[in-house]
Image 1 (cartoon, rainbow, N blue to C red):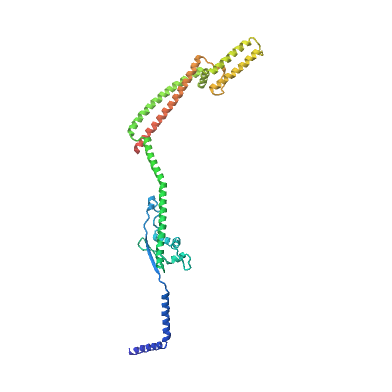
Image 2: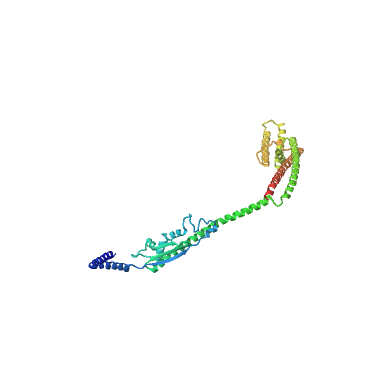
Length: 376
């Protein structure tokens, strides 16, 4: 133990002797190091940090339109995405920094507008863990500039967010304005369909209606049977009259009209007078005699006049033999009876069709009553 202590004491003395011999260079090195450190500290400028915080709240304006997952919600597209981190990237995006530089008129050392990258270098945007708060800080050698930049960045972001929310509100209002008329139309359509269903189906008293339908259908069956019997009788009478006249109903109507036309009958009378005179003169003169030829020309002219008057009465170019233009009183009565029977036959036919149509409608309604009763 004693030998070891002696050895350590000798070594210490050796170090001390070396230090004594080289104290000047060592002192110089230490002094230079201390001087350089002091110079660096003296030249280092002070920096200031301004901080601010933004509180994020969920925007429910889009819920008015039922499009919560489409516009205006602070939600991520995936389960792993962080909405606050997304907003942090928006704050650090290119439009925010240039807008802040423009508003604050930030310049570099040469007097030029500050480069956005320089602004981003001093900007820190970081969500506060476990909250809906975003921390925003800016470091600058000028404390006033640091505060202005931090505040302005938040103001620019808030204004941009307000504008975005306004656009969302406008979009929501426009969406509602577009959909409201359609919704109102659908409601009105449904109400009209319900009203029409009640009116058309008359579902107030189905039991009473079913009983009434049976009575109405029975009454319609009786009326149809009577109309069919009358129609058969009129048809038989019309057939008999046509056989007697040897004319159909249209021809009978035409002859009746011609026989009651003064113009036709006057022209026909003149024609008959000329024909009678011509027959007398032919007993006295031969063909070619001036009197005969003159009467023949009158006859032809009067025949043309008669056919012209016939066409005017009948409304066409129908040619009717002159011997059929005058009918006796009996034949005229038969023609009038044929016309009347034809008119009656046509009316009965239409009436029968309406009765059958009405019966079909009531029968269809009666068959639908059980189904309507189930729906009711």
